[in-house]
Image (cartoon, rainbow, N blue to C red; front, side, top):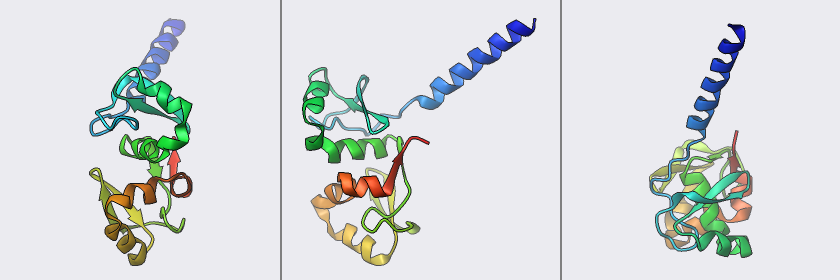
Length: 143
């Protein structure tokens, strides 16, 4: 009886772990083609997974991940695999009242100067927030 209970508990924990590990790909774009990312087409990246739109994109990414770092880092954030831990510009503690929305998710900054810099960035915002340098000091992948 105890063995059955333990097996049932283990199975339940495994199921819960699988549910928690599910990544929400709504709004996630392939870092190569910019199309909607799909489950089942992924590679490991910085402790998370980067998802792609088609079978050809993972190979292109793996051949030169540095070329797609901004898009891949952004996808880790948009999918919830990366949590913000600091201001992407200064590395200082982020203030949740000083945010700019990126793909429907708030990115916080330490001060009005950094927030203003982000608001004025226009098309350069993603590169400023999700470059490897900014990402590594401001975001944490996983727990």
